[in-house]
Length: 420
Image 1 (cartoon, rainbow, N blue to C red):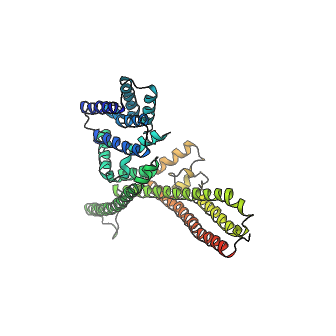
Image 2: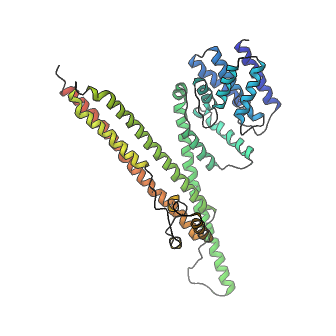
Image 3: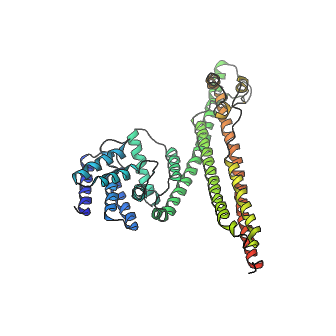
């Protein structure tokens, strides 16, 4: 049987399944998405000039990769799609090796994607091809709509934007072709999302401030009315402090999310510096140092280069090195609002009973609870300040060290050549 006829049969079969089992929830994982994945798979496969057998595996996997959704197996749709593909391949009387390869490609699309060979990499990149395309915004809205329909719960714009940013930052394309073709557009999509997030966070803070003002005015009116009814006016200007409302809670949640995201970004930057300089050191030790006997004029530049990389790694490690506190607190610390029970470093050495008593104490009074939340945000800010201070030092050392090393190598080569 020719490959083209098998692919045509797969197209007819999958199309019939989507039409016969139409599901209004599937506004993203539908026939349109399947067609886009097939087109992307064909595009990537054409670049690598796959054999007919390999191209058959890739395209069959692309056609069946999301069929599990219409078969009613949302949680395990990859396995359901792989089973459907196996059944179809059996009907077409194709070898077992084809079925195994197709199943491997479909299962590799599970998040997080972990492909083991080129064919699986092609299918994985085709499945998320839209992340690096101009269609990203449109497809992302459809995915959010489907998630809300499937869970029957509304997802706020802020929550969806944060989760999408985290997904894009964690995702990477596996084939060199996709990395080259889609990298720039994917970065632009990510930057637009981050700008959108900053705008939403600003609006949330303004909303929280407005909500707080409304609560203060309402509390003041209620207090004044109460005093008038009792005939006991209070002290001039005295107003009861209102309980924090949704606006304040939104502010706490948004601020904590920002701190955590910035901490993740700092760790990522530090890891980049460690990886880059580790590669530089390994190359320097394995290649250049063996040549120094023949080129003694490069000894000083090499020392500068090596010192720069080592120092940069040290400061990058210091930026990510965890710092755990004693892990104990007393009831007096809680009453004096000196302990933060929301941070594991303050209670990891305590028994569960002691921690439970402490949490019950702060939950009884709002001022204790919000004091702990303020402590938590403040401590996160202090840690972030240290991380970024160390990162700035590391980046400065790396920048100026690289400049000094290049100048040193240039001067050594031009003004102190080795005499033959």
